[in-house]
Image (cartoon, rainbow, N blue to C red; front, side):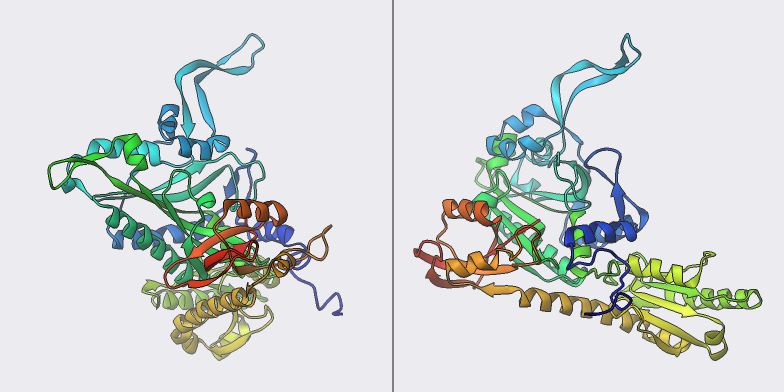
Length: 509
């Protein structure tokens, strides 16, 4: 057993002691977000919002490269729009927030109360297929108007009874793409293309490996013909759905009246898709890479990639050290990492060096640089990498660090991806019988479950009843059905009936 001093960490409890509480404490310590006074909502603080801004910028560039453009549609959606698509409204009905009045007035007791009931209630946007479809119905007249390739960055409201910062909140931020196509083949190709964009983004920018595939019928987006998703594993071995892309067929075109004159001069309904990612990716990032000292950020997504910490124990050397730090920052900013200037911050706050160092450790900044009087004399810097033990340091000449900085950042990015991939693969198992499946997903301590399970690759006969039974028994769901060359004939481990391929099962957030 390690002694208390050796096992001391910045975050209490540790991941292996209470993962859910560890997550909340990491979010708080890193100043990513905090609960709002509005139940179920969150305040995203500057460091957390900086991560989201980088996700926005980088994803938006990928969207534009595939021909999509941004627009904005109303937050308020008439209730009648939802009533047109029965399956869609049923899927979101319990999560909807509804505006029923247009003003407030003061009653006889001096209290504010709603007045002026609306002639039709307005639903606060849980998703925008119906309201965007109303606009598309006006814009589309001919096949020459297609395709429409539009994305929206917006907030969404889905009433949440069990909120968890970033992962599940009543209001959250996201992007939602909505497209209309001339043919079914084009719409299906769009659905797959955008899933590929998400997979590339999460893998290359967030350094998180994912499985991609199709959702089972019971897990599809309400009203969709097909839902594709990417599924990430975080460090308590649960899955997080990190992005979805939906082929909607002609369902929403029919309800919204999106019709066009085809090449033969006949009227036809458009083929539509929708796809989205949200601020839950920030929580995924924390859970995938964080450690018992706080957040660990991949350099490509970090708001600050290198922080310079001046060590100024004596007033007479303070000015020279700060000047050296500013000059180093300027030289680093002239350097590029992945085609963009390196993001550098000099922490000039009047705080002790240890306090500042630990703040940046908890925030997960990829590289910390210390410059003190001795470093200045030798023209050296002391470097610490967030992907290595917090006490690990490397001294090098300042000029050498300036030259090496992009390679150091690349090394951290690659190391985090390799580490996450190794963890996922070690906790992904092929399972060939029901007993092993139940054992895999059953904790030894039912009163206080330890980290257990992972991703199970197991045969399934396609039955919705089996899905429901496993969900009720173990809280385990089918995360996705792998696409492409994943066919592997076998027998369902629950019924013995034929199965064409294994599917991925897991407990999930």
